[in-house]
Length: 218
Ligand code: SAH
Ligand code: DHB
Ligand code: MG
Image 1 (cartoon, rainbow, N blue to C red):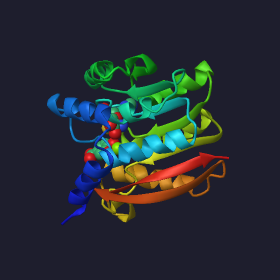
Image 2 (cartoon, helix red, strand yellow):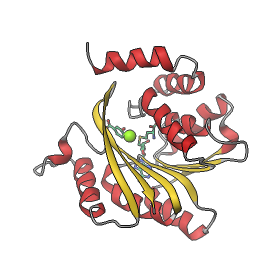
Image 3 (cartoon, protein in one colour):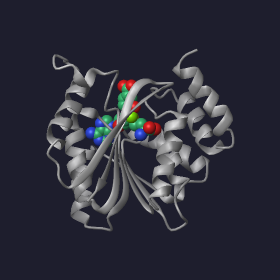
Image 4 (cartoon, protein in one colour):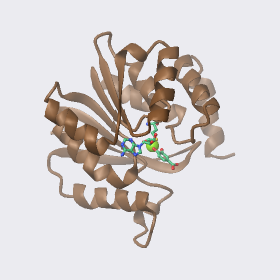
């Protein structure tokens, strides 16, 4: 037995009726996208966090094929909105097709470009704040995305950061992996971040050992 087998068991017992994300996962795989999406149990966990927090406006940083997007979008009320940011136009096009195919396209706006540009653009637009923000793009910029996310938040906004453990590499001070170094930079800075109340959860499952930081803006 292993972590992946238990994840598959949970999927069969608890997620069997969640057909839309499963359809998007299959579409991501047949489009040949890399296996970077959150796992099914993680996707549903994130959707529950968004639901419990009453989120109507969700921002996602890192779209890939729209798998986590589909979980969030399927939790939104009818007047809800999700903006998701993706640097790769080919991936954005796949996500657009995947979300349209399952009837969620009308509530999702995909902005193509580096989030290092599109997040400050969102701040400059000074639109309504977001209720829930999921940071899941290139890891070297995680700290920057977190700073922009705070700018796009109101008190009570939930900010979740993915891939904060990376098989425990987050503690390897000698790592040359730029993604892990990005996460280390994030932790070095947020240790003194007073604007957000934060914790972290390690995860095991289909995609090995990783984790989330979960924050609530004060
Ligand atoms: N959230 C998705 C997975 C995202 S994978 C899910 O769980 O289903 C990370 C994505 O971030 C990739 O598609 C990658 O192309 C994108 N990305 C990388 N650098 C980026 C940047 N600077 N700005 C926006 N997106 C970026
Ligand atoms: C990878 C995993 C992720 O969850 C992600 O968001 C980006 C990359 C990876 O396995 O490389
Ligand atoms: Mg991720």
